[in-house]
Image 1: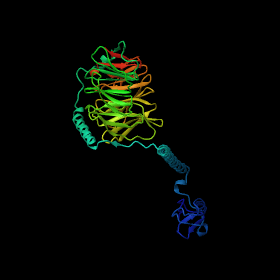
Image 2 (image 1 turned 180 degrees about the vertical axis):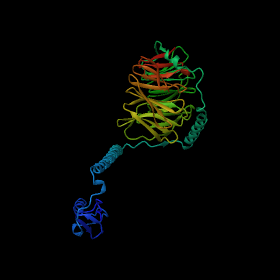
Image 3 (image 1 turned 90 degrees about the vertical axis):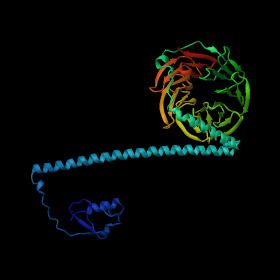
Image 4 (image 1 turned 30 degrees about the vertical axis):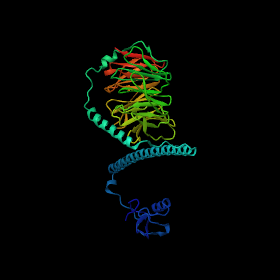
Length: 460
């Protein structure tokens, strides 16, 4: 008979009247004390008085044959030592695995606490906003029929462009990396008293410079055409210019003659590639879909409490999504929305400073952003993750791709940097302060503007 705990012949055997198992008295008493009177074999309740002593012969057990000589005893001790070492190694492995599981569980708990704290704060902010009488901006649809027609037009354009985008090849006259490395800046040309932004049209070769003192159209004429009207954002239309500022959105012809106005307190605007629609963003982070021909707002997105737009809004080349930088209670992210229902589809986190600019690549797969700390990030729109991150000197002001999506230009407070998209190498860095920079046709140069309204051409 063997002890159910140690597996050896007991010296003071006792048997359980409930389970019938045999134990060594000292072992079962310690086990019951440690387990609060539970049988170590069955788990049933077992008290010391339930143990019955068993009468047995306590004669000395004979030694096994392996312990009758010194060499045999040494071999037996060696085997026991080896078993002990193996068991100790297994115990250490189990301890290491347990520590990793505990660390992972603590990390998950910490993340859950952070999420709960953030959600609680957002709830409290929403309740405070509701009590103050300011409602959250909800989707507003002015004309359902016009809105459905706009969606149909945008869908048709997306189908036509997305099919050919993968097959599109870079133009033969596109500037090479070696040519870009030889670029140098020319003397600035004063076009405006002060500037805060720049846009360039690769088809017409014209540039737009805007700022608090107005907007300047720099085309083929020697003297720029200016409008003395405070401007926060501007962009090109297929036939004309779209300007945002002074609580209005104004449509100008190429000769800067006013064509129409749309009322609204927007801080940035970008036109859809069709030229029939535009998206405009407010400082609160809400944006509107605007029909330019009808001069009306078709729909407006919702906005979360605490949101604030920090960059101009940008349309995707296919026109079905838009992106802008949003800061929420100290968190800085690039937010992407669907144009169709104005709902956010993703938010890219990773910037530690307010984001000043975002830009879509012409290939439709990449999105770039730069912040005031000089960090530039590229995002993969297909895998929804960060593709590349690098640092530039100075405060980041704007980021822009060329028409092929092969090159990226970053304007900062101290330099204009041109970088090749894969293999992610710097091609040229020009030491000049800039608030905006754009590529010329086929990346044959870069045009930049400084805060004083000076237009600088960078090329060969």
